Amino acid sequence: MQRPLRVFLCHASQDKPAVRELYQRLNAESWINPWLDEEDLLPGQDFDLEIYKATRDADAIIICLSKISVAKEGYVNKEIRRALDIAQEKSEGAIYVIPLRLDDCNPSFEQLKKLHWVDYFAPNAHEKLLKALRVRAGALKIEFPEYKKGTALEAKPMGSPDDGLDLYRFIEIPSTVEVPYPFGIGKYPVTNAQYERFLNAPDFANPVYWLEFPKFDEECQRIGDWGGQDGLNWVREELKKSKSKVLLPRHWEDKNFGKSNPNHPMVGISWYEANAYCEWLFQNWNTVSESKANPSLRPQAIRLPLEIEWQKAAGGVKPEGHYPWDEPNKATTSLKEILRRANVSESGIGHTTPVNAYPLGKSPFGVMDMCGNVWEWQANYSGQEYGGQKALALRGGSWSNIEVLARVAVRLNLRPYYRDNLIGFRVVVSLPNG
View 1 (tube, one colour):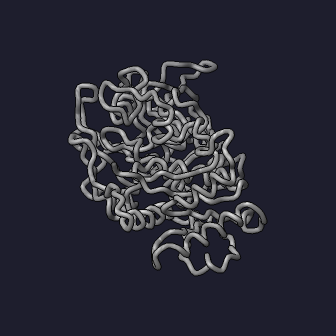
View 2: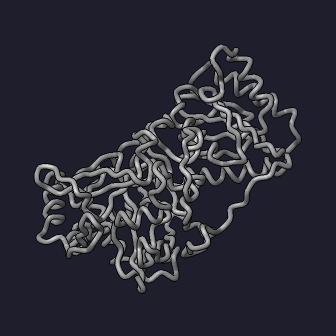
View 3: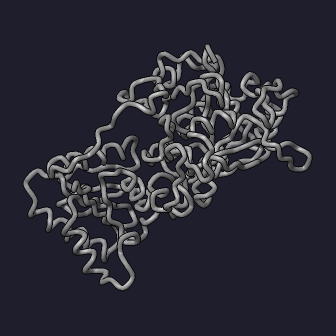
């Protein structure tokens, strides 16, 4: 029977939140079996003995270090010394100990300094880490799946996944009975790095981005445009309060959610801001990375998804309890399996994760991160009212909600000016024949 690659995570307790997130991402890989004390130690076991055994039996050890941990004396240093001693027994040149910096720290271990680091705060760091682990797995004759292009047969990716532009990809969803026209949907939610381009645009407050958003009723039928100047008046009022030319997202400076996490989903923006971004993307299509990532795509419009479109891309709402990754007529009930596929409150991470952190959570069409992480604004009204104002729909659950709220059929209802760290969005493109 094929066994997975055993990976031990060496870390200080102060770095637990970041290491817990790393554990979840590695655990989502079917060929990796990560070992983390809070997940794998059982009540009554001898802590030191089990740590020693896990270190001894590991195929690779990731040493996670930060400014806090390198300044700390104690158990983490004991684990590092133990790992380095075991490394001496491995074949010369083998990838066994992988130093991983969680921030710009300066480790003092001389034996670590001669090894190439992974800076986990740098772009594409997780991909580099997986590449190193694949090399180690190959040396041990442990099979691992190659990254393969493709989704369900009826889904058509709009570009190659090998060009470094995967986060900008759209996936074409064909016409069906439920949605009688084809459309393209963002493979991932919009990230901080993507939204930051809008913030840096010299014409952020240009009225063309903030007027006449398309209006859809509770049945996802077009009923014209948002009349008046709701979006423009709202952003002008907010800019006046902030005394700035650009309206920063509510959690933009937060180390767990904001700009320091380029591949995390965008959060802390209103429905108005999400719509304005869609229009900015459409107006600037020929100059943005999305155009390069999807060379065959000729958008007729770019907007938020309708609920019927989002549900279709997520694999449908039936049966009750259906998740995006479930096969037809299936519904996952195992919490362990859900946690391998989605960032929900039971994961214990406590904030958003990169949009590509859960490859096992993809929908039948290959659309990613539709369950957990962030609620996603939808284009249409939800049928609910608050204070005489119609609410708008959101789908997908979040990092802060229990797993049952991340089912495809679950809806959240909010007013358009609501801004929170639970809420993000993805975009849809209208196609020429749509």
